[in-house]
Structures are given as structure tokens and as C-alpha cells.
Image (tube, protein in one colour):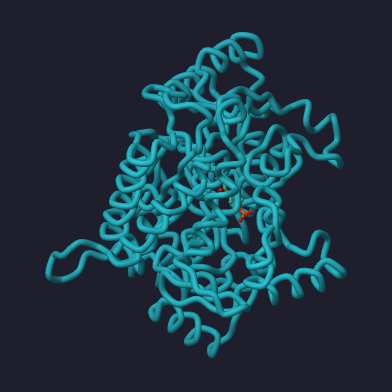
Length: 445
Ligand SMILES: *Cc1c(COP(=O)(O)O)cnc(C)c1O
């Protein structure tokens, strides 16, 4: 790194050094460590709307948004007010509150496949519990997951996983018992033939198929036409539970999640990120016949001291209502305007790719987007194997730092998606595209 870069992030570097002494790798989640782009992580001091400021006083337009949750941007007044008001009334009782029912009802209204909801504290807990539920419901053990999909860090899901695992090049983690990993069968994303073959061989011993409806933890890979429906048909035929992991795509791809975009009716849906309004929440939800297996309605045990805590429920309710309630004058919802901005951004990056001759694969759905730097024009990424083969890491790294220097903060890895909030205005998008043009020319080298 150059001297100027060092100076620009001096305070972040000091703080990172101190953090490394007391926190493994200096971070509480590996994706924050900037291993995919070299250098050290930027420490943030504050955020407001679409903008964040780091501890060295640099400001950025933020497209990470806490890795997805902040659909309304940072410190949206409605969310802040809901949190403050609830905090003053008490942050947790370990007893039911009305807010849990309200948020469950709202989720059921927004996501048509969902009939009942159980709240937990993270996406990891949601997927882990969903799998236990699928196993309890079917009395089977095997599960199918897709290579490069990330479903949190539970043992049986940390097999050929995505997100930080891909960025760090650790496809499987030590500490996961071989016996646990053995019941996880993995297949390349978008390879329906391989799933069909798996079902032919393991037939009626597969409890669940778990899938990201848009693979957004290995970059941004859309399901090919027929892929998700093919999974739905196969799982129905074999009495297997279909789990759609919408921890990232829920309330992001569309109000009803990616399942509403692609017309899929899953048995169980996992939620997280946006549902907590920026506080730690997850949920697993689905058909009543299956959800009734969960204790105390049924025998499958799952619990949580802070699950459904009123602070997080209040934040989630405030965020979802503010984003999705249709204004009285019939103007677009905040979600719709954010999705419009994401479309402008993605289209802008597509034209910049042509203009600068830097081959990119750009994808966007709703308020999410992503782009790969490709080694050669015309290459297509539809699975993790493709991503490994076609992605140009050096170009992305140059682009990433050039964008930072121009005040645009993207995920520090091209195996991660980007997010737009309702706070990103047309000026933010225009500034971002100007920065992207210059940065693409720098990245081109
Ligand atoms: C982020 C994510 C998770 C894990 O959620 P945490 O809250 O980080 O535990 C699970 N599945 C998907 C698809 C995710 O994007």
C-alpha cells in the first residue's frame, strides 16, 4: 500500500492493532477483516442515512449497510424512535410481549408461504433450527446444500460454505466433526441434474434441501430459470423439506422475498438481517403443519433467553412498516424507491463496463446488487466453480481501494453482495457512478 493510503487510515490502523491484541484477528466476524483486499479494516465512528464516517474523518456512501439489515439507511428516525421508546419501557422480560405477535403477523402478511414464525437472535440460529426442524419432521438425517451458499456457521452448514469462508479460502472448517459433515451433501449451485442424481441415489433419506434463492454469499448469482422450481418439484416428490434461506434476500429482493420474485412456495423460510431493523434478530417460519413440531407446541426443542426481545421486535416493526407501508397519497413505498436507485446503479455500472472495457458480470434484484470482475469478457458465473475460475481478484482489489479513496464503501470482497437503502438519493448514485468510472480505469491498469 502507498504512503497516502496509510495516512488516510492511520487511526483505523491503530485501533485495529489494539483490537488484534484482544480479539482474534481483531474482528468479531471474519468478513470484516479485509483479507480479500489486503490492508486493514476501516473502523467506523458514525452513520447517518446512506453515509458513514470513519475514525479518521473520511466519509463514504455505504453499500454494505451492516451486510444488509439497514434497508432505511443508518439511524433512520423511525427506527431510532422505536428503539428509544422501547428501551425506556424495558429491553427484555423473558416473557411474551404483544410486539412478537405484531411482527409475526406482519411477516405472514408480507411473505405468502409463511403461516407461523419463531423468532431467534441471528440468521445462524434460524438456519440451524430450521434444519433441526426438518430432521424432526421427516425423521431423516441427510441434508443437501449448495457449494458457495452461506447459511451461517452451524456445524452441518459449514461445509463448502460461502461468504467469509470463501474470501479466506477455507471451504471447510476444522472443529466440525466428520460425522456431522458426512450428512451434508453438497452440489454446485444451479446444477439441477446433480441434485436429481443425488435424490436418485439417496432417495428418501434426505431431510432437507437448503438454498439461497439468489446466491449472494459468493458474489451475486441468480438462479437459472427452472432451478428453484426443480428443487421444489424434487423435494415434493421425495417428501423432503425445502428450506429457502432468505436471511439476506428477505425484504431485500422484494417485500415477499426472493421466493415471491421466482414464484416458489417453500416449506420453511429463514429470515434475519432486515427483519431486526439493525438489531440482532433471525426467524424461521413456514407451514403451520411443520412449525407445530416446535416446542412447546411439539417435541422439537429450540429456545432463547433474548429471543423475540422487545427492543429488536420494535426496531423490526418500525423498519418494515416504514419501508413497505404504502403512503396515503399512493406514491411509491420507500422500498420501491430504493429498488429504483439500485436499478439505476446497476445499469450505470453495466454501461461503465462497456465504456471502460473492463469485463464485469453485474446482477441486481430489488435493493440488492453485485458484480464480478471477470478475467475475460463473455465468461459467465452461475456457480461457485465458475466464480473461482473467472474472477479477477487483482482488479477488484485496485477498484475497491480506489472507490474508498473516492468516498464509496463497498463490501471488501467480490464474493459479497451490495445493498442500497431508501436513504441513497439520486446524488449519491451519481457520485458513486462518477467514482466507479474513475476507479474502473484505475483497476484496468
Ligand atoms: C448472513 C446470512 C446468514 C447468517 O446470519 P447471521 O445473522 O450472520 O448469523 C445465513 N444465511 C444467509 C443467506 C445469510 O446471508
